[in-house]
Image (cartoon, rainbow, N blue to C red; front, side):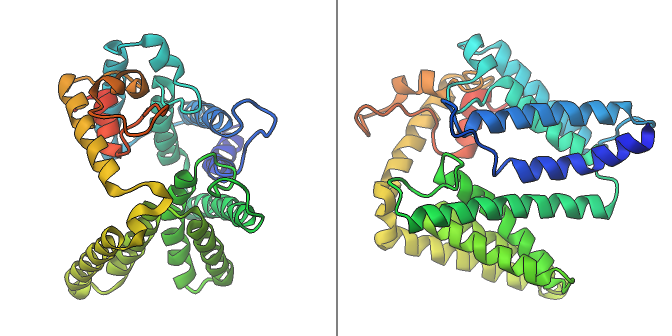
Length: 319
């Protein structure tokens, strides 16, 4: 029984990483996010359960206290939420609820507990890259057939697909440069994901991939060159960002940077109103309206601040 649990648990993170980018239910009222939210919650529950059943007990090492602190912050934000039902169930098509926050932490913890061999860790990376490549290929097909929305690979949001490629492309490049028997497959995945990222027209995704690949380069060179390469990489990222701001890319998708800056300013006022514990998980859409300084888009409800740190600070506070 122990051997079976260890084998199943060792491959569970790879299965989750593979299915998250590609699973959706076309006939459901929420085809995209709810199926993936279900995978996250179920995967975290199963993974943590298996880890607790294995002999020896789980150990997180240096991650123990940061994970406990993050879980405590989520529970505190829920306890002081402006809407307990909303923070418990999550808003429609977003579901960034307390169970989801805890499940994210559970996935991280269970991966630390269950991935006990290099082969299992390699399968996790392979599963994630394969799933992201499939989603990117579907996005490319959506672009080829000129569907009336930004290609998203059936993830429901083009920027979400771009975020996955930001993580997956450097991983695939790292595997490709090692010269393994599967180097050609890793290189092909990079090309597919690059094409998928391109058709999403995500500026932040493109900048993130450039930064990630340059970081990979900085870690790959001998240590004596690391500082120089890192500095050059940071300068190059700054140049790319400047080009985005002064070129026609700044108004790509009718989303100029001024809009984000205004939203961030309004978001800071929202954070300042409840700085310690925030407004509660997924409560941005419920509370952000009173802090908007102008009507940025008619009939549009802003349910996030479009900044990861500010979104977390608004919902969970600075604690």
